[in-house]
Image (cartoon, rainbow, N blue to C red):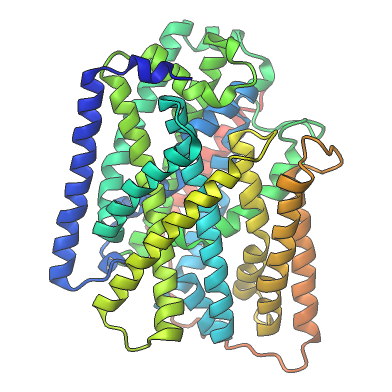
Length: 526
């Protein structure tokens, strides 16, 4: 397990040290500039351009989990995980064209604030607490857990020590700079990530003997995106029905993802940023999945330890100095994910709980102080949850991520879809779904992951299908409650002032759609 550490040279350590110091200096400089302008930590002063937004959303989305987990799936089953990146196009389009214009028109800084304008204070408070639970579990803790797996692979130290080191550094960085610092650094970090991963794929292809040799040495179904309905790992009905539940919650309602769009200069820049992340997701195959497939040919002895695929490729193919650069990339994507999550957590607590309920007259300085206390508390909780996730047995890294998201998502997806598309949705239905519906969904998740784990109890359907079934139950319940409500409370926002989508945005999304469709046609020919 310590082979990576053994291969590190003095040059590697120097590269890592210089990188860490540079990150902290950038955070500090941005922080000083913000304090002079009296900006808050949270919305980056509505100053983000499309490339900041695209790289920042991608940086939030692409944690070490993507590098390690996609390579792990590539090693075990081929390119099927590409669905989780390319099918996302539909939901990025939904965010850009349907959700973002309404969010921006309502001039809100958080998702709970948006729902509060629709259904009142009680809805805002419930959603604020739920949003914080979701950020803590699905972003902070899962991001930390995958980072902990990585550090454990490199240094061979226990999980709790790995995640503590990671969260302290990410916390200091977020503490110093807020969203603007994270967004600025993410552009550089994501370019570095692309260069390192493409280099890894290129060196792997050279060693295998080219793409034709790779295809001949792998099972033919490795190159199919759509698997049969009886496939043990990713049957097509599970992906078709189950993935959208998590994707709507993830891309369209999640504070960590949407916050970058809310910080845009204007709607078009926000929409172009969402379009840009769609193009970046096209790169998932060469960047994340291909190294795993190459590893299955070059190092078949890994067997069931497929989570080691990415770092096995790194330590065996990269020369001295490059290993340090890879560790920098891992730190970079970790700081991006954890930093954005901590920032989103502090934004929701400060705006929707502290200012709304505790101290409505709080000054900007007081808000920033409370936001920073929230960051510190979030760090402690995240460490505890990451260690608990480490005790889930019988699942690989990727499946743990998708399963946890699948159980957190149904109530959010139901509430936001109904609120946007059905004017008759009532406050009572929304509050019941967010409270009782979430409790039901999370209880099923605890049963599936810890109490009656799926690897022992084979009666469970695929975790994506469970997510879909929960979604259907909650949707039917919410519609029924709304229809039966004798005194419906709905403060429907007039949508006459919702800004229009520009022609340029529509053309770029149409082009992206054609590219995604082509990929599905190309990778289902076998």
